[in-house]
Length: 354
Image (tube, rainbow, N blue to C red; front, top):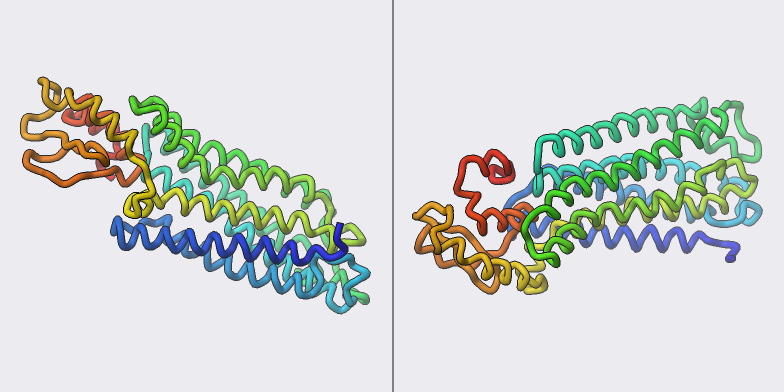
């Protein structure tokens, strides 16, 4: 293995930053220009990207001062500075991590709210993660007294100070990682079960569920980084042993932000003719009889079928249509069965009010 893994850290940081900025920019374009709807999670994405920019700068600065190298290869005066930038980046990482939970959670609430207990569960998860993260940040900041002793203790002649036992930090890190993993998987599973029960083509169901689960991919990085969290700064070769946890922390938030933005780009892909809606058209064609043979629809409404989808519209409407959100994909079931014409379906499926 190389004696200098700094370029690996810098490469991962820059690559994922570029990916998150590009997908974030496409997300903003999609919502501001194409759908003309800007949501709270879009503003949170802006904040997260701004923090990610600062995180990237701190990460590169830490590498410049020796992070990723064996300690004996770095000038002693640079040790505290490298650790300071690494520590600052780790604090920002925590903020970005909790922001991604809110971005994904609000996205899921918006596109597929489902039953009330699903909404409550998603809110409980987001609030729980936020509360514990707030406590975790405070504990991390005050883990050493004075605070600057977190990095000055690695100087040749460290100033007096104290830090909590390493075991204390390790346990809190494990709890935070476990909570993040649980949140990453429960958040998409709740609406995914609703989609799976809908009477949609199996391929459509799978594609929608994959879309919902994109944000959970980041939990894989969370799992991988757990073994590296144990006492890495207490190792004499701390600049080098910090490498893996720095890389996997970056992968975690970078993939989470990128995936959260990718999940919103279907309207853009459709506009570029890159999204195949043949499955929806096939489903709509198979369900056309419900719109003409005495189905439950109101007489003043019909369903228009095109090569892009099915839409329930006032009589005389001619424009083709494709669903802009997952809630509209699932709503196709109720267009086909006629349930959407009843007050009961409006109460049962709250996305009709979104």
